[in-house]
Amino acid sequence: MAKKILVVDDEELVIESVRRLLKREGYDATVVNSGKQALDKVREGDFDLVVSDIRMPELDGIQVIKNIREYFRQNKKKAIPEILITGYSTPESFKQAQELRVADYIYKPFDIIDFLEVVKKSLKKG
Image (cartoon, rainbow, N blue to C red; front, side):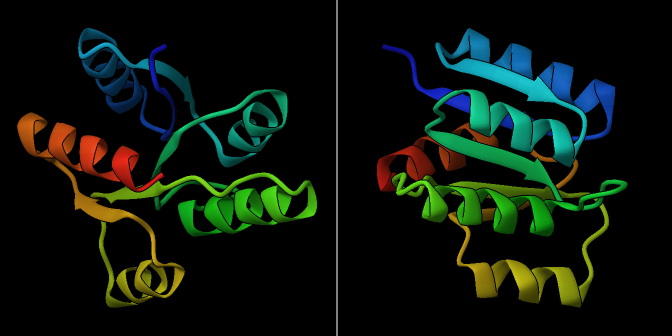
């Protein structure tokens, strides 16, 4: 069975490119363009990995990860690995990602091969 990956980014080009890439590699990718949609998807189904942009309107990626973790905790679900991606890294966002102990932190634009390696490595942690 294909691993299920939730991709969260407010840039349509990014989510569509990542969706196609993951699908080509045999993953079942669900893409959404907001943190609120991501939380809805997590409530609707199970995922093996979350890939989220950090900088988004309304809920940023850090908040999305915290909210997903809280939902899992409240519903006694097993935690899943998370990868944060960003094109606008700040020392603060990097520090927050480290404090969350996310599986990985990737800078946009990213190399496709490197991205896929991070996905594979993160899925093994889950």
